[in-house]
Length: 534
Image 1: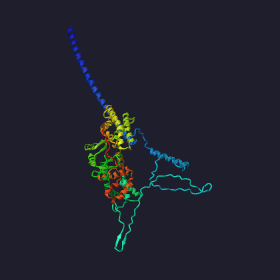
Image 2 (image 1 turned 90 degrees about the vertical axis):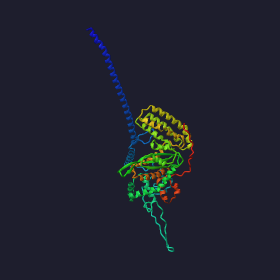
Image 3 (image 1 turned 45 degrees about the horizontal axis):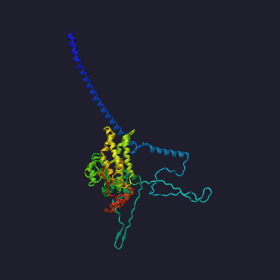
Image 4 (image 1 turned 135 degrees about the horizontal axis):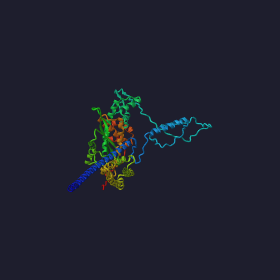
């Protein structure tokens, strides 16, 4: 019995450690599985957090675009969507109360802070004399001691009128010949419209972005029926007549050493499929820091291929300010120098800052970038050499500090977050951003060409799509002339009417005189001072 008990004790002593080891191993396996599951869950939570942050950023951006202020200033005040209606209603209620109370006083108007009426507008004087030249109290004669002058702005809608040309015919009885004044040459021989009407149609279509059917309705309201087919014929013929001016404008644009470029999508009708397809309006803008008249040229193309930019610029070589679109990259392998837009970088941080509660890192980035723009404002009107000196002394150290700060912040930022994307975009573009301080005439951003494109993007809501590739090219040509006229401070209708009157007999050797450019006697020195970047 004793020997049996001892045997059992010995067996138990061997079995228990094996069982404990098995249990311990099972626990380790379970713990490892739990740790793996915890890590997977943590990774999923992190991904969800990043996705939530991204969606929150996008939602705030679209809400701001739709409902908020368009300005990218640091202090963004939400504007009342119904402010205009409230002002109108308030004015209407005040007027009704004044009528009910009989308190309408014809007193001298108080200053309202409104803009002064332009002095160049024609004035029609209306003199209002008293009913009697004698005093209503004592009957004595009145003496003029001064006068009260007030002005009201008025407008006269489109007014159609007719030029009636009468050419008397005279005969010579001796030699039996007839003499009469010749018919003046016109862009459209025998046409119904005078140059003023042609100019009005082009302004309505390409500057005010009205489709032809609306122009047809406007003319009908004034008692003049102009068929849409007739309007279309005029537009097509005038586009061909104005094309030489656009070609010359392109040549002058490419004489600049620095250019802006951008593109925006437009819809083109695809008759074979009964729907529209995407095309692009490319825009090229002169540099405002060069002392030359500003020029913008639009180039309509059926795709966003970078080959279109290479074809337009052809042999041009210089500094090109663009965004990060890959279609421009081939140009930078062919002798063109890339400049990056600091406003694009700023916009990435501003979208973060505009989130509810703001973003401290984005706010600091905006503050630093704001200092660079403040320096540019200080030297807006100085010579390029002086601007270069200030940029090297003041802007370059700030840029270097911004660069180091961004690299440090990137190490602290999670991949995939909105801040990481903003910082990565800026660091990626940094060499091209830094180039603006290496010259005195390089721009800091691409805003000039974006501003030139903006009227087209707004006008798309009216005309929706172009009817054909030829129609898109014609729109690009005419809009190039009208947009350049506006940049040069010319009234587009007056300029266009004058050109359409002169063009039929104008020699091509003097075509520069017809271009919508303000005259200047200042020639920009191309041999500008450069400096090497540290």
